[in-house]
Structures are given as C-alpha cells and as structure tokens.
Image 1 (tube, rainbow, N blue to C red):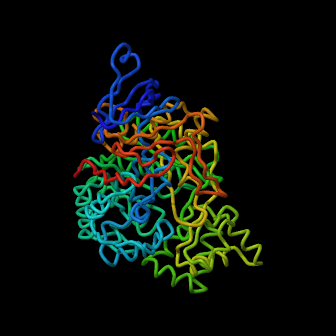
Image 2: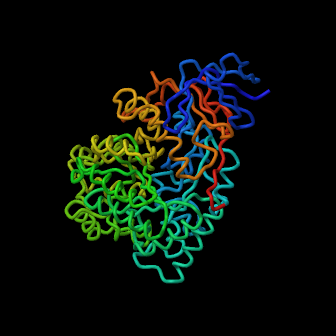
Image 3: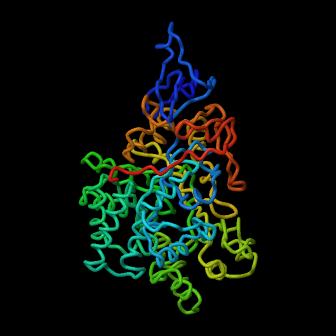
Length: 536
C-alpha cells in the first residue's frame, strides 16, 4: 500500500497547461501515479494507507521562493510558518551578495554586523560552519522547508580582499575564483551580488565577469541585486545582461523592480530590453514580489565610501560630525549610490524594526514623521538610529509603482520571490504573504494572471532555473513537495499594520510527502533539507 492518495483534486501541474481532475498517489516522498478522471473511468481507483479528500481544492507543486532571507531563520525557528503556511516548499538563500558562507572568523563577525537587520545578530545561533558545504550540511539536520544556496559575492570579496574600495590583485581574484568553484562543487546553485551594498559594490564588471565564468562552468546562474533600481536602473539592467553574455552565464535578475519617481511607468522599457536579449539567445529569468514598497536596512541607503573598511569603520564615520555631514549631503542632495542615485525622500522611509528595544518608538513611523514629532531634522533621527542600533535598523521604502509591478509579473520569464525579511516588529507583509497574495489578489481579484500561468511562475519555471530535475511539477517520479489551496478563499493575511498574520485558504502543504501544514495548522515535521546544485 502506498502512503497517501489525494482524491479528486483539481491539479494545476506547474507547466502552465490547463488544470485537470485527478487522484495523486504518494509513496516514500515521491509522486508514484497521477490518475486523471477520464483515465480512471471504469477502473479501480488507487488505494493507499491514507486518503485525503481534495474536493474543491487545487493541488499544485509547492511554491519556490526565489529570493528569501531565511538564512538564519530556518535554523532559529523550526516552525517557520512564515513560509510553510504560504505553501512555500523551497527557498533560495544567500541573496544580495551577503550571507554566512564561505567565511573565516573575521568575516563571519563582519557579516553578522552588516546584515543584522536582515537576519538578526545571530547571538542565538551556533555558527559551527565556515564553508558552503558545511552550511548545507547544517541545513540537512532538518528544517521546515527545503533550501538552496547562492554563493554571496560580497562575502567572498570580504574574505579575499576585505572591505576596501579597490580592485582585487591577481592573487585575490584567483582566490575568489577558487572560493566560488569550491562553493559550486559543494552544492551552491549559483552566485549572488549586492551591488548597492558594501563590499560587493566595490567589484568592477571585469571581476564579476570572471566569477560568472566559474559559475557557468558548473551549470549555475548569476543573481545580481544590480547597481541601481532608481536613477540608473535601465543602465544597470543592461550592464548585467552584457556581463553575463560575455561570461556565458545564465542570469536571474533579483527583485526586478522599477522604483522611485524617475521610473514611474517605465516597466515596458525594461521588458523590451529583456525581450531583445532573449531573442538573441540569452538565458534570463527574474523574480518580483507583488507589492510596491521595498525593504532593506537603513544603513544600505548610505554612500558606498562611508562603508569602506566594514561596519566598524562606518560607525566611526557616523560618530564624526564633519563626516556625518558629508554623508547627509550625499543622501539628501546628491543622491547616494546606496539610495540608487536618487536623493532620499525621508517621507518614504518607514522604520520597520530595530535591534535595540530603547528605539522601539520609531517603529511604524517614517523618518520624516519622527523628526517632525521631535522637532528635529530627519538626518538627526536617521543618524541616531544608525549609531544607536549599531546598523541593525530595517526599513520599508515606499517608492514603487503598481503599474510596473503588474507589467513585470506578466512577463514569460517571471518567477516569484518574497525578498522577505523576517526581522523587526513590523516587517514587510511580503515576508508572510507573497504567494497567497499572487493567487488571491492578482489572480482571483484582478485577473492579471490566470491561475495556471501564475502557478507556473511560482513552481515549474523557478525549478527549471534551479535545474532541479524532479521538482516544480506534478509528475510521476517527482518529489512530493505539494500544496493544496482553495482558489475561492486563498489570500494573504499579512498587512502593513499586522504583517505577521498567516494566510487563509491553504489547508495542506507537503514537503517530501509529509504534511508540514495539515488542516491549516503547522505540524512538527521537519522534512526540509538542502537542495544542492548541478555542480555538486
């Protein structure tokens, strides 16, 4: 007897094809048969030790979050309902060029400080790994959902070069190549960059091209947070397309948005750029979240020169009045590279979380509103947060445009990614709501995508990008990473006011054939493991 049969499900199989009614049989973590209603007519229906009546529910592959910041959350929080309850069965970690492997003791400490706003300081984590392979082995001890890993280029540069704004020496470049090759051989799926974050942003294109050549050799892809989403956005996208063309490497554009006032209504220009590259033979995909605000750390807005030397050097510069005034001018007047070349608009910068409880009063308010309440200048408030919170402050940045969001999500190479930061008292609701928001708001309510097309964006297409031969589709022999949802009620529960409310209409989620969500509740199952790339 097989383990489970899911009866009378409306199967949306992740390919984009029309849905069909079927019984789906699961055994030993895999789909062993898919018996369509027409094929079952007059035949004995499949039997199993357990039956689940899926009448009225859609059965699809589990959702793949192509841009996640759960690098420590998966270790810290076995429940991980933020993603499991959305139907996510695989997350891609190591994003934006900064994560926790490969490291040595020095760079681990530096990276922990630099991205405390994304993942917390990590004081509750036993960092018993240093290499990519050791981190993946740590995940293999059991996590809520599966995880793949991108080698973070900024971390690699910190390890080989440091946090200085200079070109790498030939020996340093060779070490970076070696670190990337080792990470790919140990199971990474590709390379990420954060080209508005230090120290990754200090790398010239020639250096990035050399690293991408290594990635391509192992069948991986390059996932850049490129150099601008604001004043220079189109040029930054074109730069990444040309760089990966020269390197012969697949390209996946992270959170491919067109933000700030300078880009209002300009999504068509980006899509035309991508269509031209695709027509010329480029291998390109992208991900987006279905919301208009962005989310990052407050420190990320600062000019790159201020962060040279690492987090401690940045804090020293902020403590010096004359240097802090230079930083302010770059931010407010000139438009810093950290703020995408656009002068910061403090009314758009909402504090979403702080590490220091004494600063909680700022959470949920924009920097401008807090400054007005206190009778201070906005930079005075921002500087106090940066120094007092030791760079651990997270923000929402309300700079997106709905028409751009809708246009980009329709594109044929689009995939879904939450870019979900789980830290802070009021995180972006995308962390808890991205996937049901696609299905409830953009499919059912607005009709921007059909159900079959949307599911393909969230399952089959990202699995193909990750080169996973047995995930992302409802097919015999594939891993039983599955979600059952009610298309009439599925919706994000999270809002800007209550960002940690769980979604509705997703009663069942299976990872490796085991229920992690059952009858709408999180079980104690930890069936997730590291999913290793083609270079392993």
